[in-house]
Amino acid sequence: MTMNQPQPESAPRVRPDRAVLARHLDAVRITGRVATPRENNLAHIGRFLAQERQFDFGVSLSREWTEDEVFDLMVGRVGISDDRRFVEGVDTISAEKCIDALDRMRSVLLEVVEARGAILFATGHPAGLLPVHQAVAAWAESRGATIAGLRVDERSEPLWVSAPVGGDVRRMDRVHVWHQHGGLPHTHFAEPMLALLEALQSTGEGTPDLVVADHGWAGGAGTSGLRTVGYADCNDPALFVAEAQGQVDVAVPLDDNVLPQFYEPLIDYVIGSTA
Image 1 (cartoon, rainbow, N blue to C red):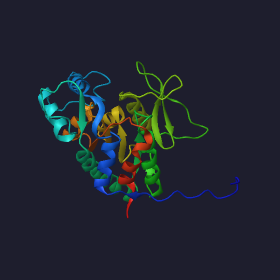
Image 2: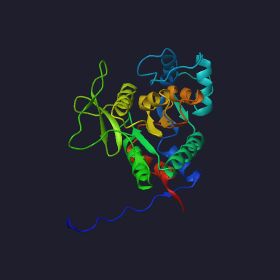
Image 3: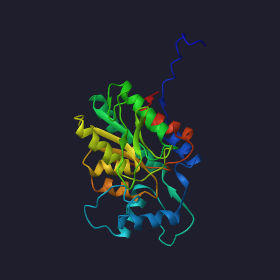
Image 4: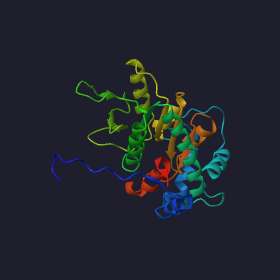
């Protein structure tokens, strides 16, 4: 193929059957017996309630929560084991709960896209979820939505994140990421999102109609009052508490760092057309 020849169009995405998707999610360990250990899940509940940075995801507590209450929430919304005697080993995420949440996420996306709203995309897990956000963002833009966020042109300046976090926010193919020391780190920090929102306000671009994100990007957006949907692992209680508190519209439970290609059927389910 020469440079002047038209590029082939990618095949349209077809939404898979729910049962087919559930089998795939369990098979590649996006759900089912996931890689996140039980002891990690339990420890993060306590660290979130202590509001430790990186574990709070920028989510403020609207009431006092006990560890038992958050544990029960994670059982109900994520599908971790309800056996309180189980404290070490392989924990689980429910494929059914994941798909239920994907249905809710799809409904929110369709509503905003059909209204030609502005959507901001961001990820704290670029090695796993960046391609997911990129695909959904491209679909939303193709349907008439505006992709909100940093201006990307020859006049753009770095958007620095203040200390102690540091680094800067970058926009890569419609999706915002945090950059530091030449790489795109996995991060739970909310500060990159807060810096981005402040910058959008200061330039007069305003706030987006919807944020699609994960980690502190989602927690920071939701706590700031923006309509937010996102993805969260079974050791990420912050976003599920934010959902229960009404700060996040939808938190989708899944393993957020399997090989990127394993998420393709999930992407098809969110944005694909019914066959």
